[in-house]
Structure formats: C-alpha cells, structure tokens
Amino acid sequence: MYPFVRYVKELLKYRKAPPLAPTGVHISTHMCWPWDLDPWVELNNGRTLTLYDLGRIPLVIRTGLIHTLRQNRWGITVAGNSVRYRRRIRLFHRFTMVSRTMGWDERFFYIEQSMWMDGQCCNQMLVRTAVTSDQGIVAPTRVMQAAGENPESPALPDWVQAWIAADATRPWPPALPPEAEKAVATH
Image (cartoon, rainbow, N blue to C red; front, side):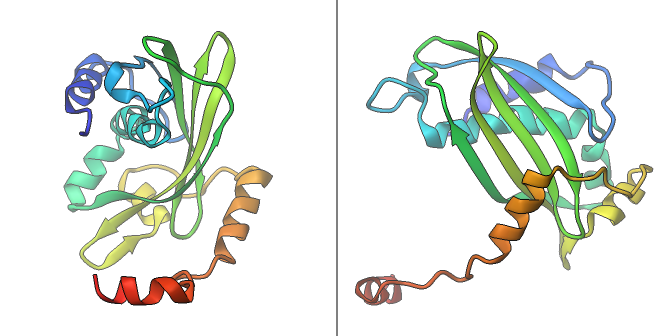
C-alpha cells in the first residue's frame, strides 16, 4: 500500500520550509517500519522506490514547480530510474534522504536521490521524470520558462550523460523470448 500517512506527514512537515532553487537540495529523515520490510527483515527494494516519493514530492513543492504544474494543468511522471543498493536499512533504522534535481535535457528532468545512515550511503537512485500534458511530454525548457526560471540546464555529470546514452540503446518494446510470446498475447 502507498504510504499516504507518511506522505501527508512530509507535506505538513515541510509546508513552511524555505523555498529551494530549481537545483536545490531537499533533506528529510525517515524510519524503516515493519510494513517496509522484505523476508530478510530489511527495507524492501520496491519499497525503497516508493519511499523516494517522500523526498521527491516535497522537492517539487519547495522548488515551486508544483505551482507551475497546477497553473498549466500539467502532470509529472517517472520515466525511468537506476538504483544502486550498498548498505542494508533494517527495522526501526532512521535514515536521511537527500533529493536534488541535477538538470534536464530536451525531454526529461534528472533527479538524484540517496539514503544515508551514520554518514554512509545505503542506496542511490537516478530518476528521470517527465512533465506531461494532454499533448504529451512538455519540454523542460518550457517548464522552466513557465516557472520564471532560467531554462538552461546546469551541465549534467558525465555519469548521468553515460546513463542517458546507455538507456537510449535499450530496445523498446523489449524483445520477448519465444516461450513468453503466447502468454503475453493472451493477457
């Protein structure tokens, strides 16, 4: 189930936080609860992705992007991500989440998020988001202009550019193994 109570808590907690620049850093603290666990009694990898919403949504609000989205009846969606897991987060562990927009290209915004305990990074995610309208994806430069911000992106780090280039070589839709074709066609 989506963590609606935690989501509302984050919105209330940061409702009066100072605004952030488009590439500002949002820092929040969270705890791993029993319903976040996998069978190995650690933070579930899928739940990690869900909990990253608790940092990304306040980031969008604090940067003022939420007002631009509402004014233009635009939405925002995740269009891809890559996660690196390195340290376990276990039951009742407190962790700090760091969220920031690194920049954008002609179609997507790129946000880096990470979870930390005791000065060590537990996991890190690069997420690609798209602003959408009834006509499809809205160019980030148009979004930034509508928000009254500089439409020019900061330079994306080499590792982000490499991820973008590698992901562009990935076939879409994916090729199915022959034994899966029938199963997919019937559902």
